[in-house]
Image 1: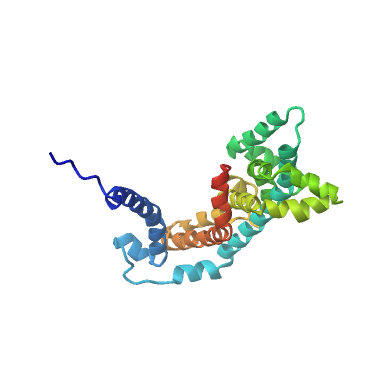
Image 2 (image 1 turned 90 degrees about the vertical axis):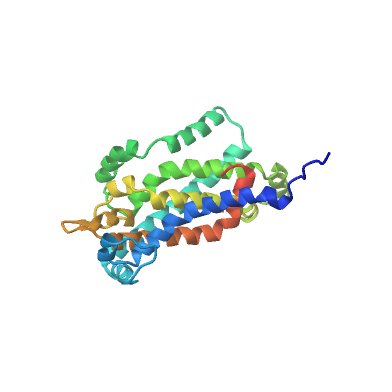
Amino acid sequence: MSTPLSPTKKEKRWPSLVVMTLYLLFMVIPIYWLIVLSIKDNTEIMNSFSVLPQEPTLKNYRYILTDYSWYVGYINSSIYVVLNMVISLLLALPAAYAFSRYRFLGDKHVFFWFLTNRMSPGAVYVLPFFQLYSAVGLFDTHWAVAFAHCLFNVPLAIWILEGFMSGVPKEIDETAYIDGYSFPRFFITVFIPLIRSGIGVAAFFCFMFSWVELLIARTLTSTFAKPIAAAMTRTVSATGMDWGALAAAGALTLIPGAVVIWFVRNHIAKGFALGRV
């Protein structure tokens, strides 16, 4: 009696390839469609449906990159995002080191309390931030948005960095002190290079949240520091929606994120491996 042949490795692998292909198509199609819309004019967008543009045009990109009220939104967003990343990392590094190296009364409760700030929706803090920054003269400034986003990004950065720091043996600290290193010298020249992957991961997630967040950034700004996400609402007018300009603006917002991902791609992979991402 003949026995059935066992499936080969290729036969076992093709269902996984099909699933992965469908998943990639599902992820790529929205980005592809956004780019296609950005190189069409509104007449073609509204009157026809085509996978490829019939008359490609770059006028939407020229409009976004030459109109001050548009391109200044990218500048404003970049400024407060960078400020927030720097502030969050400067605050999170010593805090994460304390949680990873020392045990003190209520340390686990404080660590959990930090994370609860990240769990709260941004709408809860909009009114307190608005009243506070209006009273102290920070309303409609890049610093206002950068400080507000620290409420969410600092706990996240502490949580990520604490995992990386806990993976560094304490013997390295003790050896450095025996060799005569002061704490600032040890922390900057020895410890930080050992956790540069964690810093890259934390910087990426701080960037990601601050770059896409709209509610707080829009509430705390009006004209001078208005981010690109808020400026994109200008496409609505009495004549209708300017779909081409909106698509071009959306496509351009992908570039900074792609650049950051390219720089920290290896660090993100290590973050997954350590279980902190």
